[in-house]
Image 1 (tube, each protein chain N blue to C red):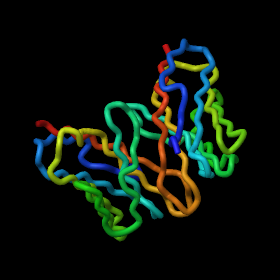
Image 2 (cartoon, chains in turn orange, blue; image 1 turned 30 degrees about the horizontal axis):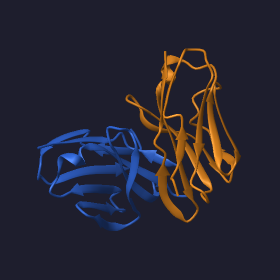
Image 3 (cartoon, each protein chain N blue to C red; image 1 turned 120 degrees about the horizontal axis):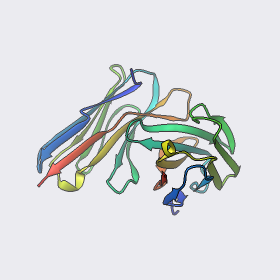
Image 4 (cartoon, rainbow over the protein chains, first blue to last red; image 1 turned 135 degrees about the vertical axis):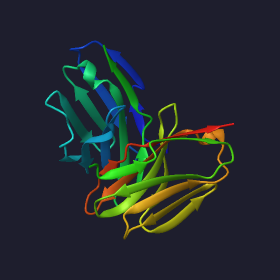
Length: 113
Length: 109
C-alpha cells in the first residue's frame, strides 16, 4: 500500500481565496483524521471521521473550515476564505478498528499571503 | 495544563550519548504513541504502547500506566536521530489522538 496520500504537498495562496486539501487514506482503514500543525500550538486535531461520518469536529477553528468524506477512499478539507493565520502544515492520518497504530500522510504545507 | 506534557522541549547531545525523552499525561488512555518528525516534515509512527516496554533497534519505549508516564530512549545516538519526537495518547473510549508539544532533538557529530 502506498500509505496515506495527501495533495498538494505545498500550497501558496492569497488571502481570501478558497483552498482545498485532499487525502486518500490507506485502503481498508475506517477512521480518518485531519490535523493542523503550527509552531505555536503544535499538532491539533481538527476533525475525524469514522466510516465516512464526522464524529468530532470540535477542533475545526471556525465556519471557514469544512471537511467532507464522500466515500471511504477520499476526504477533503476546505478553507473559504483563507486567511494568513491559516498558514500551517495540515496532516491527514488513518487508522482501522482494532489496529490502533496511526498512519500519517506527508502533510500539506499551506501558506496564505 | 496540557493533557500531554513532554520534557525536555529541546535537547542537544553528542553522538553516542544515551537519550531520554519523557511524556506525562493526565487522562486515562487506551494507547500511547511515540512519533518522529524529521525536518522534511513527514511523521512516522515509532511505537504504540499500552503497557510495558517495546524495543526496535536502538529505540526503547516504556510506559507506566499507574504513574501516567512514558519514556523514549535512544541508545548510541547518531546525527540521523535528529528530529522532533512527539508523544500522543488515545483517550479511553476515543479514537482521536491528543499530542504533546514535541521534543526537538539535535545530535551533533
